[in-house]
Amino acid sequence: MQPAGLRAFEAATGQERKYSFEQQRESRLTPAHERQFRAQRKAWDYFEHQSLWYRRTATFWVVSAKKEDTRQKRLATLIADSDSHRPIKQLTRPVPKREKKQR
Image 1 (cartoon, rainbow, N blue to C red):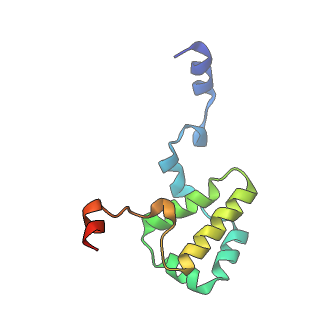
Image 2 (cartoon, one colour):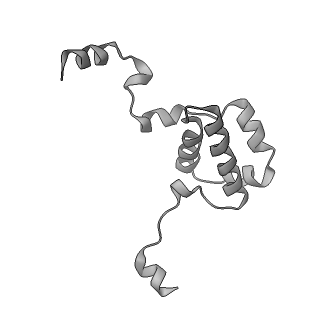
Image 3 (cartoon, rainbow, N blue to C red):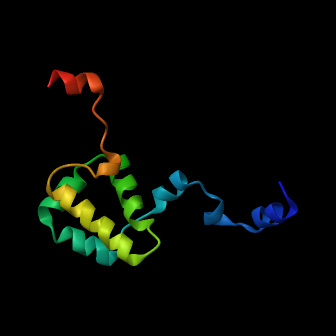
């Protein structure tokens, strides 16, 4: 590593030194976002009944956006998909090719 990189690494503390999967355990929707989500009762109920890994990952996907506009778009997607009782596209498991042919 170059001297500048070593200095940057030494200066990094706490959150900056964590991997993204470590950070998502700490992520939560803002109170305003949570109120917006809870207002859609059917979507909220679906989301609450999903596994912990899904809720954590989907929440991190929303809150990790840098811009508020992007967070709002992602929250809207999460709410719409939850209202339709389906996971967000990023967390949908692909269907293997052999199962597609059988259908």
